Length: 485
Image (cartoon, rainbow, N blue to C red):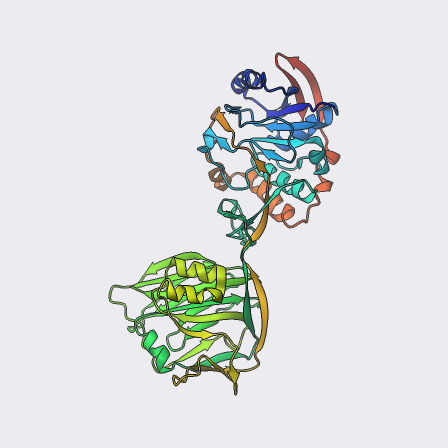
């Protein structure tokens, strides 16, 4: 049986676009050898527009002879042969170079505009959700349905682990525009310790360390916070006027320093709860810089800043009141830069030779927890007395740190589309962040119910579709299906 295409165009109150779209599509497809029909799915009620439900309704109404579908925005006009409307072997995204989007994807998982899907894949995914009223998220929901129902999608990895970073106060709790794709997963092994309550590492700052922190310091470490406490928690600090790395409110890493006149400076960044996080805190050149999971924030120190004198003070790692898991605690020279931080993040201690030889960044102390003697962790075996005392019980173990997360995307074609531009069409991400009650509700559905698997995709879609067909009208070049949602 020859494949037959249904071009399904959700529509309402855009007659001027319809008058351009239909003849353009016929002209574009006339010599492509594709058997197709254009269906205009007009929403004929006053409810907020429901793109997914209109698509589902047409799929329900048309004959089984249509073996695949193009779900198509009415304002996108194909203009080169890379826009291939032939039968797709897997879900395929066509609208990748759209004039209104500056010929680039609005965000990496964008699956809107024009998509090709076989009937089999679409029905296995139970179609679109019927629950997205107004603007946004039906395309992301469909992508997840296709993934879960076994359609072939290409696997990539997100360097930013975007869907691991949750902000309950944000209209986009997972900032989808921050996805950074790579073809290869990244992970490395670390030797870690679990510092439970009543356990900490504590010791006098020896002469070797004193010489490295006179004008500033740099500390790098991994931590995992599984503690339910939301109080301020010490991870690594120089005691006195405490300078170092702290956790606050179960959400934020704080990097803070004190000057010799007891002025206080700090920088903060959020972290992943119950997951491994990498932190680098650098105090040098009248700046305080904090990297958390390879993301940087910095603040300027006063022009006459002098670090508080810690020569007669102690280093403390963790505290008696909290639980924390730590690994690869390093004191480094102060010439750390973004490249060094990136190497430490993606390759861990395997990068130490590289950052010393290539970047000239020396390792002043490495708390690797391997050399424990008489309740002391030995940092070296020389004459520096470079050690720190264990108070409590030390638990050590090896673990792998995953630095990327899987993300599945459709096949993409590099076709170009001219836009019939209308208000608000050029910046999709900006529209997501503008207050709109429909977007807010759709965001809640997708991020809180769909991503968490609270909502079974087989419980809402083609198999639970309620709608009313007012009429079907054969027009010049298309079939108009008027639908009450």
